[in-house]
Length: 307
Image (cartoon, rainbow, N blue to C red; front, side, top):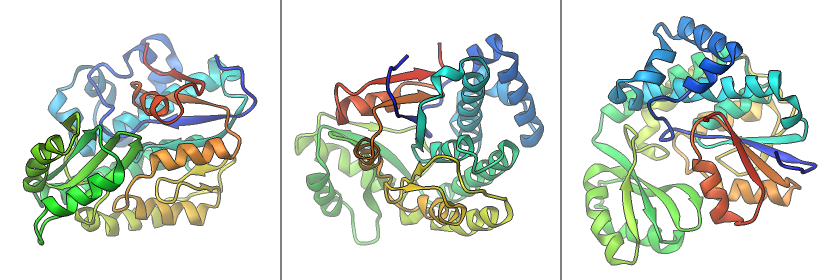
């Protein structure tokens, strides 16, 4: 456990899902199993069964992976609040990677669990529909910096293709998003330009680009229908890497998020500049702690959710 005065809680996003996630939480803590049961009632299918046993093709589908990751994150957070409150007593800010920002807003009191889950389900369905409309995807480019990679994307895509840096995760790790045809040309071009490797991501389409614009109207409608409150701690937005607590601001930023780049590295650096002394990653996997090591190598971090 970190011994710091001010810590930030972080929630992972899509791509962190894996078969078996949530099993330890459900097997060990009744409160987690109860939350999964509640989620299943809202969603209309057995979420724990899907998370723990798959099939992987269904879990990786956007409309299923987003509610699954959100529920695992909130289950882990509820276990912390119930069983290990001392690990949360110094949490003064929250952030989440893409989908994880919804978990962060819920943890910070901006959304109730059932409302947030319905919102995440509708977000996933809208993004899945937008992804199904065009052959697109994402890939992580390892070992290139933002400026040369941005130039390479512009040089690689044709005039009628989308290809852009979409997730600015940490130095040397940037996710590129766009048409599948452009991504296929980018991989050898990036390697030739000095990238260590290019890794396709387990997502349905070109998230955080204009190709997700068809999802915006459905998401805006869902956000307008679901109550959002001011949060008790700041939530750092993917869109502008700044802290927000106003319900109106959070609603507007969440609607912009699906088409805008994820400013993850900038968000982490802003949190550190604002006084955060350590981070707690809550949910499944270690993806965010991996980015932290590339942003500030010796900065304290811990995790909870997978054992």
